[in-house]
Image (cartoon, rainbow, N blue to C red; front, side, top):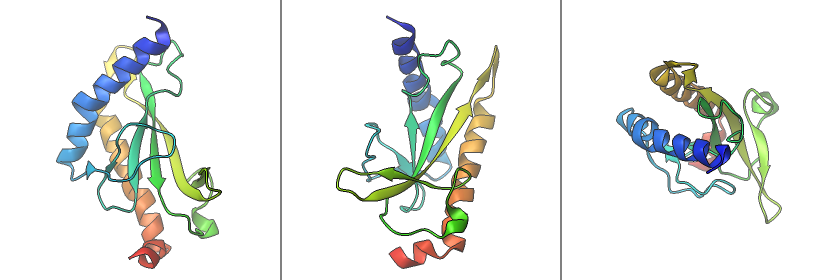
Length: 146
């Protein structure tokens, strides 16, 4: 096995054994939305915003066993207000049919050398989810979909 394969296996195991069950305890549930580029299932707490784990990005790095990417997907081809566009909130992800969804990607570090920070990483993911969802709600974007 090479480094890339080892890190992907490690990341997937950690997500399945720790992060997904802990997020479910916080009120998340399995998402029914298929991500356009990530094959694994996602989680949602409100059916508007969906959270996915990207185990591939950076898995070839020597410290790839210490972090992964989380992608928050807003799976609607609608116009967002300019104030919630950009790297702090949402950027587009192109679909095959010429449409776009909206996403936000975050690097989540759950280990610093020998020190594990699983709970801090979990809290960070949950807080970021809430922040992104609140930005959608405050911009009245979710009202257009209800």
